[in-house]
Amino acid sequence: MIASRPAARPLLLATGLLLALALPWMVYPPVALDIACWALFAAALDLLLGFTGLLSFGHAAFWGTSAYVAGLIALRSGLPFPVAVLGGAASAALLALPIGYLSVRLRGIYFAMVTLAFAQMVYFVVNQWRGLTGGENGLQGVPRELFGLDLSDSFLFYYAGLPLVLLGFLAVWRIVRSPFGRVLASIRDNPARAQALGYPVDRYRLLAFVLSAALSGLAGGLFAVGHGFASLENVYWTTSGQVVMMVVLGGIGTLWGGVLGAALVVLLNDYLVTSGFEGIGIVTGAIFVIIVLVFRRGVWGTARDLVRPRSGGGRRDRPPGEADGTPARPQGVGSPV
Amino acid sequence: MDGPVLRAQGLAKEFRGFRAVDGVDLDVAEGSVHALVGPNGAGKTTLFNLLTGFLKPSAGRILLGDRDLTGRRPEQVARLGVARSFQITSLFPQLTPREHLELALAGATRLTWRFWRSDRLLGRYAGRAAELLDQVGLTAHAATPAGTLAYGHKRALELALALALDPRVLLLDEPTAGMGAEDIDRTVELVRKVRAGRTVVMVEHNMSVVSSLADRVTVLQSGKVLVEGPYAEIRHDPRVISAYLGDPHAED
Ligand SMILES: Nc1ncnc2c1ncn2[C@@H]1O[C@H](COP(=O)(O)OP(=O)(O)OP(=O)(O)O)[C@@H](O)[C@H]1O
Ligand SMILES: [Mg+2]
Image (spheres, chains in turn red, blue):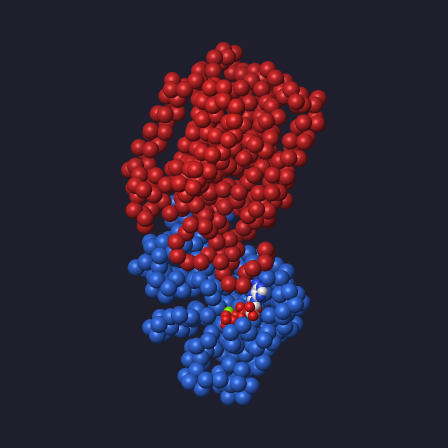
């Protein structure tokens, strides 16, 4: 009953908060910040994948664009870093408007492919626009300004950046449990029925897309400031793939799962890199395949199902396509309308 | 009964060369209950999908009053006052009946865009939702996830959802399909009650339901209108009998 019994929720939340505060003591502080940023990125993607039913394979566009914009703001204006990060998030949201507008009408694999294609275009632009982005060198020496405080120590910077991450999580949590979030869940489970009830499905999807992009941008901007540079890797397709992997690993539509997945992947990558291992992709890939085969609902999703009776609460947290009972498609609604 | 509120003119739908709906003219009089009958595969559901924007017609026009509905999207059609139920129950399996109705009732408001507010706000529709649940006999199951409801209860919820939109025209696709006698009686009573102030078009195979509710009947066959008229007239039409009512017991 862990996540469903109301009394268990605050407990879970307190544990999560405590872990977030203790993290830089447990792992190397820059890794702690990486975990926090990727965890928010994963939650933002899950908002789309788990709670709206859209698999974006181009979220690097938002994470990376914000990384560059936040970096540029910090470099050129000298404004406090939270302003730069929020500016990055805003730019990601802005970019998501046209991309989302053109892609939310597509379904399934087509949506994934089109978002990937747009992200590749963003990559191309960032790579070509050397004067602004530094091309292959990336954007170097991004400062961490905050009212003259010395945040060069990554241990301190973790705590300076954490409020932004927590703010992001709060936003995801609120969206999922808002009237809008209820509509998203219904659209995910049965878009035709939502339309029959008068809901302009694509517009709700578009807003979900923009919100998800903004939160991905929040994470990406902080990631860039934390590292002190923005690089092409931030907008590369492997970044899109990695965040999808984290959410699937942890459990689609669970929020906590994405956090867990992010922690696992970042720690694993860090371990493999520091041990000088060459074939990182092989190892993470193999682990991914094994986990997906063994835990069909991801690590978090499976664990949650184990401690909770099948018919219990938390219904809205279940991933799409696993609803029990009724076939969700109405008859004769075959063509994409 | 007044002039037509819903009209189809030369409506056609072609699926890769197969004409599922083939030049249908239909006038539904304001305030009437209009039954749509015909053998399996006659095109009744396809016609509903055309009327509600779920399918784009290959040819023809759809009018609601003097408003052109042709080519509108399903949510626009719903907002303009044409609500439908689905033949194959189409629900949100993880939501309870109460949550279904809250969603249906909130649909027309700006509340459903508020991503920064709590979803408890949807509770403001609890009163009206409870009324509707009571009307269709679902009060005892208000908090059961729809996916686990019994078949008859799912059908009842399907009907309640369409009613929640308070539509000018209510399209019901086989509302009594698979129901037991008791549920059928309740559904007939319900349609009788809710028809006040609106127009009902229903696809219905059960002829006793048709005879007790319908003012007019349109018989479809192979995508075309075979006969149209009051039930008392069409029931004896030899074409209808051979096409559909072949079994004389089906009439009672
Ligand atoms: N999306 C589709 N693609 C191709 N053919 C379709 C599609 N929808 C319906 N059809 C075909 O069109 C014909 C009419 O189907 P429809 O569902 O409208 O019949 P119906 O009158 O509602 O029948 P029933 O009484 O069985 O519900 C059938 O032959 C069906 O196979
Ligand atoms: Mg049908």
